[in-house]
Length: 313
Picture 1 (cartoon, one colour):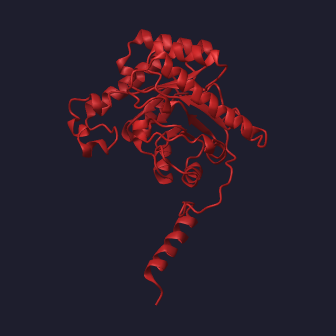
Picture 2 (cartoon, rainbow, N blue to C red; picture 1 turned 45 degrees about the horizontal axis):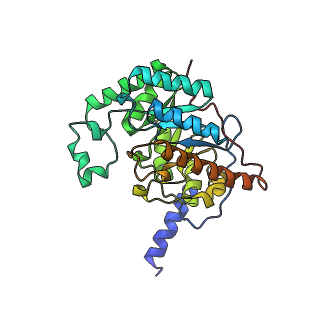
Picture 3 (cartoon, rainbow, N blue to C red; picture 1 turned 90 degrees about the vertical axis):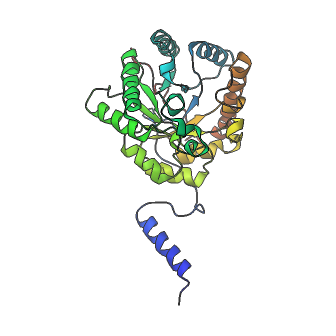
């Protein structure tokens, strides 16, 4: 009699392989041939640029250090910012040729009806909403941001993403609106990635600890959606820095946004001063140096589309 575990494993391998799914991490890495519209393979994304003052300081230090990033993320929730500040942030990014995305609110940590979220069990659910009023508020926030000229939205909930995608399809939201899925959606494998793409995601912020085999598998399942990969991580989220893998990540995950700068802070809610911002920029500069060395040998590693999530006039 054959060993039933071996038989079961072999059947799983045959089915997964026949349907294009990964079944092992012991696979040979192969470069992705997909690119941004500009034909670039990667872009650089700086997270946690949450207000106009931080944006102004960040751009000033980037320019002083002669470093360019593709886009910024506002991640505390755009509903905390007044219209005039959002307009000023969008105008500054437009003038200086940066993209920017704003996070939708309200998230459960702000919602009085989401006390379960604050428990140890609720925290494991990420930032999914649990009431229709919050769904309405998220949709209203998206419409507000679009009316202000924002083209990039960070989405924290699969149901909200599905609704927003329907609004983009019927023209209620502009067709050029980009939906980026937050890491709090816990996109941790290729099957989950496929579900989010089917519901309208243009970019997937993957969980922070994925190895090259899973990134390669997710690339195959994600169509033309970008994979947004954390390269360095807040201390409270593990604190690791993957600069030594950055060339390989670009090759297997292209088109990819490299999220860089988080390791300058212990927590995304830490107070941000000029010293912290300078440290973030230093992280980006070092990562780009390492990619530059790789470029001497591999001309396929080219910069991504600088117009991704540019504010609308």
